[in-house]
Length: 161
Image 1 (cartoon, rainbow, N blue to C red):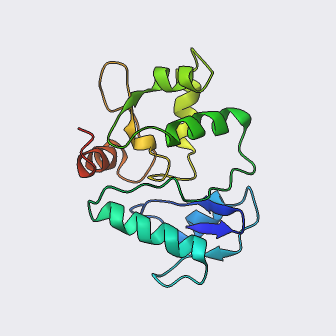
Image 2: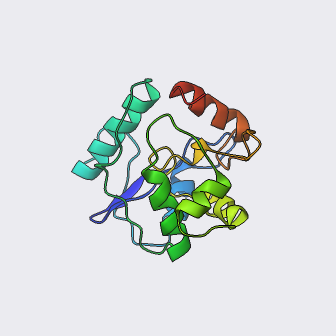
């Protein structure tokens, strides 16, 4: 995870075969200046401490409200902000189709572009891109390590399916 005074800049899920988790996070954070990288469980900053605590609770299977986490949207397109912002407000354990998300974000008919925006989501889990599914009920793609298998694990973890 990377952050600055504006909030969380990016977070990545572990990726099998990645050369360096820090390198992956820093590359995803290049859109805005990054002050820190949280390598361990003892970050110095309150933003990071709160975020890591909530993410750990999430992966422990607890129901978590990520809305208090400040996110740094700088450098994201208006379209990405609309899609990710709309998705962030999706009630816990609910899924939504790419097409419905596009419509609710104000871009009806932009389901493919919505999928592209989600594949570049800098805030996975906090903005639950794993809860966006195909209109036929299929899982769809997932850009994190492990792909659709990881998406399925996250959906099962939180009781979304």
